[in-house]
Each structure stands twice: as C-alpha cells, then as structure tokens.
Length: 308
Image (cartoon, rainbow, N blue to C red):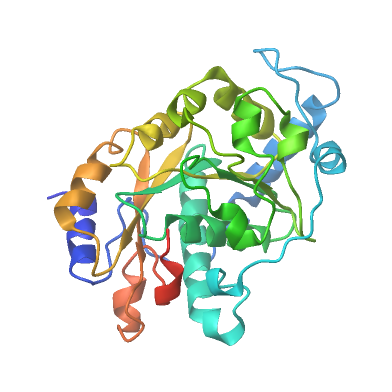
C-alpha cells in the first residue's frame, strides 16, 4: 500500500496520518531557504508588470496597482474558524499550520509550487477551514502575498470564515460580468486577498472549465506568492479534478475518525497523477501524543471547525 493510502487508512481510524510526500518531517521552518528564489520571482514579475504582456497576451499586474483598484471591505473574521484569531486556545492549531507551511516551502524549494488546490472526499471534512488557515499562516511571514479563491461555486463559504462580502466573486468573473479588480477583496492590514464564490449559478462546472478560469489564474499568479483554491469535494462532482490541472499541487483533507478509508482512497486516487502533495488530517484528538501528531502532515482538534 502506498504512503498516501496508508495515511488515509490511519485517518479513518482516528490516528495521525503519515506524510504523503517524500519530504522529511523536519519541524524547522525552512521558509528562509527558498526566500531568495521567491523574491527573485516576485521581482521578475514586477519588472514585467511595466507594460509588458505575457506570451498569451494577458497583461501582467503589480500588487500595488491591484490593491489600489480592488475592493476594501471591512472583514470581521470568525474566531471559531481561525486558529490565528483564537488566542491561546488556538496556539496548537496555529503551530500545526506553521508546520504544514514549512513542508510546503520544502516542496517549493524543489519545484514550482504557487497554486495549491484544497479538496476532500465529501463535505464537512474541513477543507475550507484548512484553506483559510493555511493562507493566514503564509501572510504572517514578512512580505508574503496570498490570494484565496473560493472555487466551490455550489457551496461557497470562504467569505463567511473571513467575515467578508460574498459578492461579487468568481461566478461574476467567469460569466464575464466583472474583471479581477471588481472581484478581488483586501480587507485586512496584511497581504491576504480573497475572491469569494459570488452569486449562485446553475452551471458551475461549465464556468470552471471555461477559458476565463485559466485566464484569471494567469493574471494573478505573477502578483502573489501563493494562490490557494478551495474546491468542491472530489466525489460529488468533477470540478476538483479539473481545477487540479490548473494548479501545481493538491492537498487532500480527511477528518480523523470520520472519513471512510475506502471513500477517501477512491477520491484521492484521481489526484495521484496530478501533483498530490499529501494528506491534511483534520480533527486530530488533542489528547494524542506529541510524537503521534508530528509524524503526520497536519491536524487540528476543534470539533466546530470541520463544517466544510
């Protein structure tokens, strides 16, 4: 059995999962090791932003220009859904997301990794919670620019986690009713931006598979260090698999003690050839040993955070 299938099996038993990539579980934050390369990429993008277009004709943007032109609503994050807003009660969860962040930086040091898709087998396993907190862990580093995209057009929830307006959003952009300036929000003092799901649509799959989704990612990728997409559950619809083709890697979320092993294995198998980075274990028993947790990829122990 492969390492990822073993991780899914353990998750179904309510235990910590093994890292599903070949990265060693070193707990030292290795962000500094790849800082120079990321800074170089950012500077290159900014130089290109001075009036130069990409090979496909899509104009490059500068972060400063994007921020000036986008919406600036007042966000009111839900502290129950953020380990970084929960004070002492969320300290263990925050540390776990810092560890996950470090693992991703390790991968980014070996190959391109800027667009990350977050998905799960079925609803209520915590993928939206993981997406939001992973983004917050990144922007707590100096000068990191992160874009969260709610690509779950059937049940968008990211705006609720951040306490942000839900429209206009991705749906409006994909229907050609708004440009990137209209749908991107920056509601805090850090460099975290959001594209919410937007208004309800009757044809989400067709919109996500259209050319405008790829165009959007091509426009925003040079502007941000990390782009995190929250996608629909993998078994319900084919959207996650299609979006994975537009991303550099996929994180698969399972709920400890809840996710059925066979269901998770079936859902995750579709991503094995699509840069599956690993398994994120949500809902880890806080009474588990330190060693049990740190042999895993990530986890969190609050029952009220696994809503999606």
